[in-house]
Amino acid sequence: MKKKFKKIARFLYHNVPLHLIFLLTGLLPNSVPTVRLRGFLLKPFFKSCGKNLKISSGVILNNTHQIEIGDNVVIAHNAWINGVGGLKIENNVLIGPMSVIVTSQHVYQDGKLSTKYKSAPVHIESDCWIASHVVITEGITVGRHSIIAAGAVVTKSLPEKSKVGGVPAKQIGAYNNE
Image (tube, rainbow, N blue to C red; front, side):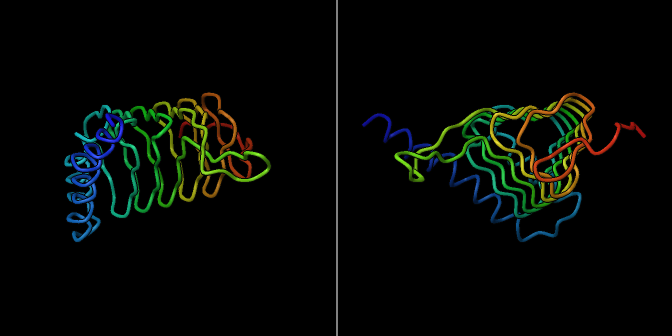
């Protein structure tokens, strides 16, 4: 009974206000003041959140109470982010439009796809650029100063200063800090 009450309370006091903010700010143009306002209004819903968060319109955030965000993070429009397994995004990270970050996946049980899932945390270290349409799967660490090319699917952790692309993501060039 206690667990059910917690779910209802989280829905009423966490999920509903979170989605109301998205609904109301979704009517505003996707401009610098609006993305800053949206980030400011959503800040209290995260496990922790640094300064200068920018969130564009159409972003879907699930289980924000499991998401930690550093300073100067930008989440572009229509990104889908699920924090059920735990997600840590450090400072100066850019997440491109229509990118997906998942911290869980459904599992097979008795040879059939189940509604149950396994989860594992995702950690995106500082100064990373995640281009548009990128998918990052559960249990991944993206090392500092990494660049993930548009359309890549990251299924393995990346060391510092990685430059990857493709499906699945593979090294596509040397890191260049210019």
